Image 1 (cartoon, rainbow, N blue to C red):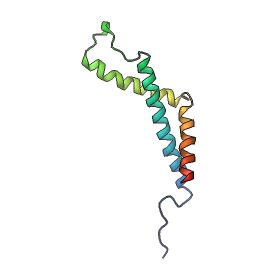
Image 2: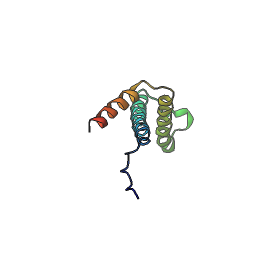
Image 3: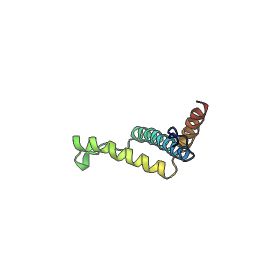
Image 4: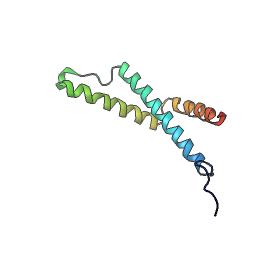
Amino acid sequence: MTAPSPVGAHAGAQPLRDQALRDVAQQLEASFLAEMLKSAGLGKTRDHFGGGAGEDQFSSFMVQEQALQMVKAGGIGLSEALFHALKERQNEQ
């Protein structure tokens, strides 16, 4: 009977690690874009729609989702740069 191999020792682990790094990079780009969209005024309460605390709270979800959709559509290239930087750092260790 052979001993089990350590986690990540088999060839299938690398694509899983790459996907995890890519997901993290895309989340970081989405957070960056969400902050940029907020700074641009997206999600601010409009008085003619009634406004209120609920609208203020849920507008951040809308902005975050719009930023995530922007990343899924190609984004601004930040996630790809982050992915490669994270991958290089992982390979150094």
